[in-house]
Image (cartoon, rainbow, N blue to C red; front, side, top):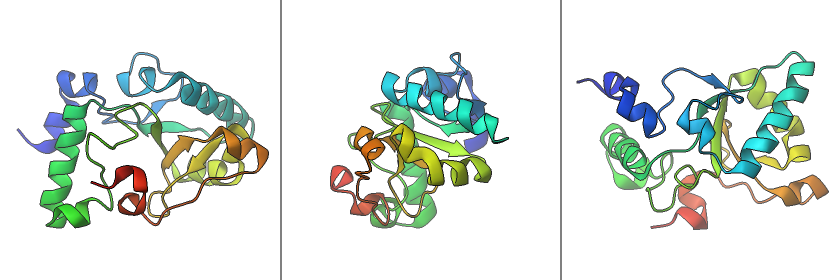
Length: 161
């Protein structure tokens, strides 16, 4: 079975795979339904306001099971040739904010640009410079106190092995 077939299987969907981007209001997709409630609510408030500007925010990734996160990590190690290089893109199941439901990957590019400019008003912040699609909830950003942005996940103290 190919990687794309594996990602599209019903069991992978239940583990958090998102083979086709879904609306932030899709409560049937575990990757959205299992997000931390505060993150999901902030994302939905932002999506309503973005729609008023003609921008649709879609979820490309969200909550993931530890097993699915491990599969993604193993795939990244294979693709990039080492665990160190893979760590620039994929965290371990033990350290991934996706596994805890505290991170969401959004698209398309217009949604990323909209959130980059306006997301802090909802507490939604880009955390990694190399991942303009990855957002986490940081309520302090609403008051202008944005968290540090790391070059990539390997620089984030939360993801260090």
